[in-house]
Length: 169
Ligand code: S3P
Image (cartoon, rainbow, N blue to C red):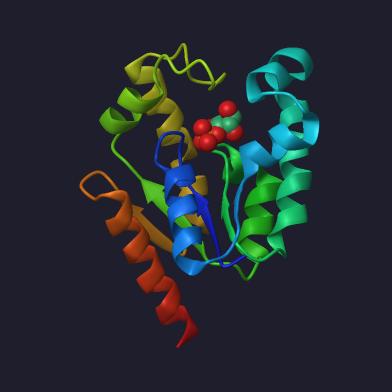
């Protein structure tokens, strides 16, 4: 991979990943989408029928399958939270970019979103607590942190591109 995007739900990993891949003319992989295609089930169906543990096992296997491919990988919000994944992300030679957003922005984007089984019922405080609880994992694997609140997708993608180019020199 040229870069891996991590971050809490609703921070723009999919949108930015697509844009970045388009700019770099490489394939884009979205780990949730990879899981959906692999199983033929939506994320909600997977959680409902088989539980989070099965989802996490699949997520881990498919993360490993993709690390050596060329492209940009957008992970799920819980990917770096799992210890095995965090170790794999840290050990990989791939630059990891953390997308940050304020909890207000995130709440607006994810509350009542039925496609996100872990958060659609959470209050603002509960969502803030979950993000707080996960933050150290996100930062532990990040080579670059981008605060996205006041930037457009193009500006975010340009920042990441600049960082990746610097790494090459
Ligand atoms: C999850 C985030 C989701 C998806 C699943 C679990 C999480 O991905 O993987 O619902 O634990 O944070 P997005 O961050 O793309 O919404």
